[in-house]
Picture 1: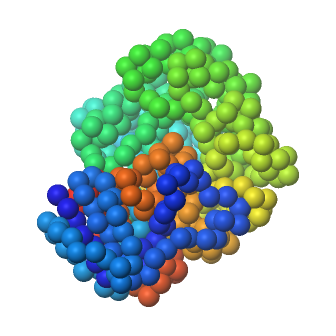
Picture 2 (picture 1 turned 30 degrees about the vertical axis):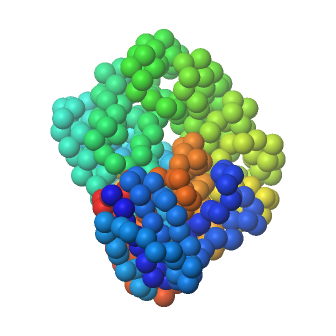
Length: 413
């Protein structure tokens, strides 16, 4: 099937070079290559060609869309989510409003442990069906590539159940999906006094099964005070590498945990959260290929201080943005809202936020060769907006939903 989109007000995030751009860093993040008054041709699942309307050649297409007044962008690449979960945690939301801290809720058996109890009581089929609804919702908001973590099982069968659900979503959805194995999300109650026993369970029992069944792309862990320390995380990352699971790491959300440096040391694909970033973390990242991934939606929902995005970008580093969609600290996979928060609270420009959640989001999932920009030969995952005055209107008009249509692999989503 051929789809031709004409009279595009602005075709954003275009890539004209024959070499694949891997990521955008530093001052370059403020630049979003675009073509005004453009056309774009999709052939099959791929972008075939594009250019200015004034130079559009004669061509045939099965469907022609007039995009007058509309922008076309690559779909969002959301590289950090916990989209597979059993139930919301709205009761904890009310407790936090009354002054109970996130850490205290966790100590009382809430938080991740609460989600684990509910998930282990739910059937795999019901868990899949609920998660599929959420996946369809985020696709409708423009997401075309997504990473989904386990981490609410906290036992061998629960973690495998989650990863099987993620695999089924991947098999039956046009959206690109990467899976992360996150058994090291919290210590289950039965291992509260035997933390070494849980580490061994992950490494010696869970990990061989996860790798043997091909259920995950990445090995993730929550490096934080009260959860998993740097020595434990380093053991887990080393074990993951032995099974071909590259590391990602939750780092520096609540404290200066050393997680950034540990992630860089073990060649993590990304270090995620980063509310606490100083000169040492910046220096460590500067000497690496690890992607700094910011999750301001969680800081917003928890009422915490935000990530120092300007410090990171001004140092010349890349920044990725992701939603952290999860039932406790960020129950939203709405990327346009994420862009608004990033502009108003992290002081990022609209162009920087789009770069952060397209090409850099793709890079944080190792998908930059096929997703994240408008380039001939890349997968035709596209957002067509409603008629809007400018690119900056997307984060400006927060909460109102300016994504009109989504194309995934050349077909309407």
